[in-house]
Image (cartoon, rainbow, N blue to C red; front, top):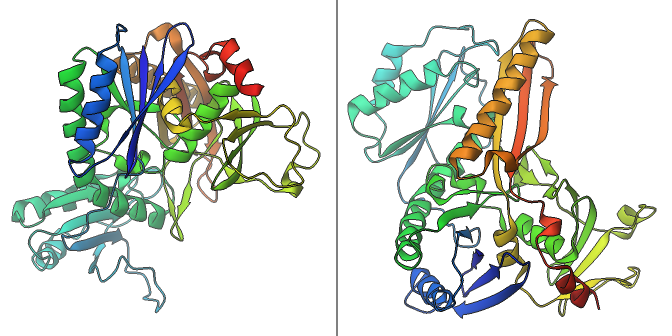
Length: 428
């Protein structure tokens, strides 16, 4: 049996998905004893059943909070300091250290790293600071970011150091913003991952634990503390996936009506279509996210076939929307989506390739890495599906520079996980 648990501020909901396609829901209120206690009570109720739990997937997007108590400092490595602008985006009052260095997109050094200058400047970073380092060209050659990190760690002053090359984006600002937010989420992610692993381990020591991601998939819970940014916005994609499971949709458009409004998305081969950037709080973040948009009459006009419609009980519908054949439910779709979510992994990067043969080799190697990691997550190799595998030319770059994008998932497509009789009952 697979279990999906949606953790929210005031309630914890669990969806129990059995091998025969039947499912049931459990809910527990979050009290003053905390989230861990509520999850423990819920798992205790599940443990009383005769079913064996093979996996538990958590959606934590509502309870991952930023911790910004420690001071923040930014290190920007580039061939020359940029011209200061009055309206330059700043992370609050964080000091910015401009350091000479950086690489081209091919990994060639643009300017030597100013080691001596950085050593002198780094001495002024307050002890206990969170330091985010971003260098030009670090996606291909991160040596200057790593060199700056070694110098900082020699001083022993910073609380922690974050390297922006861990996040895939050709935009310097996008990588920096993503690293800043990811770093602020880490303390809460570490606490949640540890406490939930302990609680789950006491009840179901053999169950594999995972956490949902912004792309509508899931990864082992142990990966949450390293990159919580990829799980911080997973609520809507996972809810959308639960709606797709309920109406048995693997390919096509889906409308989801909730109290928050009407959302349109697309499923391809049993997984949500994704975009490589997420806009949040007037900034762009480097995280693969399900492409979900507010649905309007103009946007839906003329779509053939018409999108499937799933309506949460009590959700309002616009007068222009035909609700014939709609699937109505009072299930917690986020918990159901977590139970149905496939294991997912990405291979993203920028590479230099001289000819078509080298490009094919890079793509083949990326696919092998994805398949290998999914197998390491516990997936059967035969269940791995590569949903996206492509090389993309980089804008305004050298002809040899291409971006690699490979997406893999493991598990059955979401549309066939629930029993058909359950879906027909929901549609009536």
